[in-house]
Structure formats: C-alpha cells, structure tokens
Image (cartoon, rainbow, N blue to C red):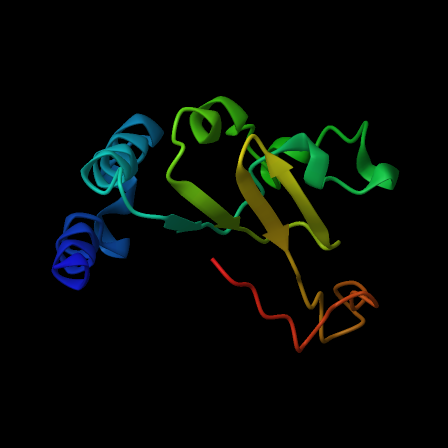
Length: 130
C-alpha cells in the first residue's frame, strides 16, 4: 500500500511540471502523505538542507545561504512520525535532531577540484536505521 501511495505522489510531481507548483503545493503534498501515515515512521529525502544548523561555520553569514538551505524546523516539529530527514546541497556533514526527527547529511562534495573540494568527512559506509 505504501509503495502505491509513493507512486501516486511521484505521479503528482513531475520534473517537467515542477515550475507550475509553488512551495506551498509541494509542502501540502508531503504533509498529506505524513498525515496519512501518522502511525508509521516516515523518511523525507530532500536535496536542500532543512535547518540553519546544517551550515558550515565558515558560511554562517553568507548571503547565499538561502540557496543551500530552507528553514523547515517548524514543519518537521509538526510531524511526530517524521523519523528521519536526509538532505544534501551543503558540503559538510551534519547529524542532529529537530525534536524527535534525526536530520543527517553525508555529502561527498565535488569530484572535480575546479568546482570545489571533496568532503573529507564523507562516510561511504554510512548506514542509518529507522
């Protein structure tokens, strides 16, 4: 049943149609899913970071931070069944909790030194249990 629901969610959000949807629509779809499975542990996987705590200290005051993270802490706190958030886009590791939700980021970084550096803390053997 859950696989079927995930397929339905994927069918609602298509890459070629993404520009038609605003953030509120996307959050509404995710929230519907979380509410439907309120008795199950859920995982949210997102490209961008979800909390300012994911920023590297060297970028704390950068004007570009909104390009790397969104502050979804209130959204996460609303959903007790959200057991894990896996995110990326920031180039440093993080592993912390927002309420009861574990938030992790284990990025590899850039392969090509022209674009930036590899994340020396990347863990290729990371396993997360939910």
